[in-house]
Amino acid sequence: MKKMTSRELRDSYLEFFKSKGHAVIPSASLIPENDPSVLFTTAGMHPLVPYLLGQKHPAGKRLCDVQKCVRTGDIDEVGDATHCTFFEMLGNWSLGDYFREESIEFSFEFLTKVLEIPTEKIAVSVFAGDEDCERDEIAAKKWNELGIAKDKIFYLPKENNWWYAGPTGPCGSDTEIFIDTGKEPCGEDCSPACDCGKYVEIWNNVFMQFNRDKEGNFQPLAQKNVDTGMGLERTICMLNGYQSVYETDLFADVIAKISSLCGKEYGKGEEETRAMRIIADHMRTATFMIGDEKGIVPSNVDQGYVLRRLLRRSVRFARQLGMDSKELVTIAEMFIDKYCDIYTELADNRDKVLTEIAKEEEKFGKTLENGIKEIEKVLKFVQNGMLNGKTAFRLYDTYGFPIEMTQEICKEKGFGVDIEGYHNAFAEHQKKSQAGAEQKFKGGLADSGEQTTYLHTATHLMLAGLKKVLGRDDIEQKGSNITAERLRFDFNFERPLTEEEKKGVEKFVNDAIARDIPVVCEEMPIEKAREINAVGVFGSRYGEVVKVYTIGDVDCQICGGPHAERTGLLGEFKIVKEQSSSAGIRRIKAVIDTTKAK
Ligand code: SER
Image (cartoon, rainbow, N blue to C red; front, side, top):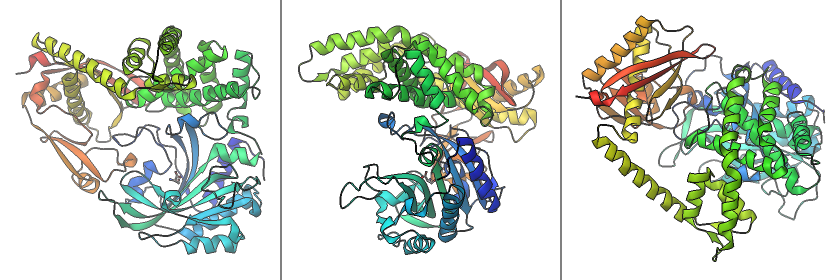
């Protein structure tokens, strides 16, 4: 096998597919726009869904890229040899061009000629067939012709050999490619489907020829596509004969730094090694999340909550190792330096990444030890092996412990957590604060839920206003964050807005408010939304049916909601700040005054 660095693998992959007529496209953002069904981009194909469904891609029918991905479903596995919450996926696509056989030929050639993997080290799985799709004898035959022995070709069912983009959308059977590590089989049934470690998956070629509808039926797609994904970290690890991804050039220096910061040897104690790996993994993911072109910051909901969990978990493991958790910023800096020539957004957002991490460390660092003491104190009196829900909620509310962290700490000590009790305590608390907000409402203030909803509607009106006033139809949302106090909206524009333009946008929004237009929500197939020209980033969607919010003749957008019932409720709209967010991106902060509502 050819020993390669990560850079060499990225370059040779793209070079190879370029030589096979593929256009190289850039990585999309980690944060899908207007897509309520996933928080992060989890595979190279996500941003390409409209094209897999038949829309024409401007770069052609053969594409390849290196895509930033985040998957946090396996977060508990992080710390082992191969699971990472962030990874880069090398991918090549055929949009109604080549299909199974050619795709397998490309993969085989790349693996054996460029990566110099001996044929006998390759094992593959193919689809075993069922009532939805035939047994994939074509793929099996092709692999065999190319030299893969029959006993290295495994027929596996849907459970293993079918790729779904989401609950609905393009999907199909796949053929997965594994490196046979040479370990003894774990038993007679040993196959790539088991997790004994004999076979490590490095590449997946999906033959996307179906669209799964809402009823779960598989409808043939208008075109047959190929969607492949190869894990960069794992492949580097296999090629170099490393024991884990942490030995690759993507991590090795970071691990050495963590080891020196805590004064502990990497690879010695199992727990300590795991903790060092978790810190390295989580800090890399956090760096990419904050430093993304649509970067996020820690919060208590959605993507921000996932980020918060990663950062707080890192703080905990750092302290556990005896490392000053303020040094997490140094680790993030190492990742920025390492990746910023490929992912230039990290360089653009360097200060933001470092500041946000420092802020979160500061916030959580103060309460962490007290929270742990509290857990230890309470656990002494626990009778049924379960930490009660109220305490778990107090740990969240007072000490900032994400519930998953409380569960993890309790588990380490041999206890469970009463999750239902926790959710009840949470709901109880929300009810109380809601009641408090309603009280305030009587005194002339809207409650926070309403305020946020109205600001959301104001955001839609404002985007329409920006397009109109600036005379630019290509202006689109690059990021949006709404709290009860204000909206914050990022959009593509290359210079500051003039006073006149700002006033123009305000007037546009306030005119729409004055007309008290009803806001209408309709569910419709994505195709129809496209037909009626609803605003939306089709490049990152994959849901079949979408919600479209229409505000009279002013605006029509694909959006998850919620919105005000009518524009009059917004009262008065005002821009409070307009500034640069990053290169070519402007940021507006705006407020509404609902007391002015008629
Ligand atoms: N979408 C498939 C995967 O993520 C192939 O890229 O495995």
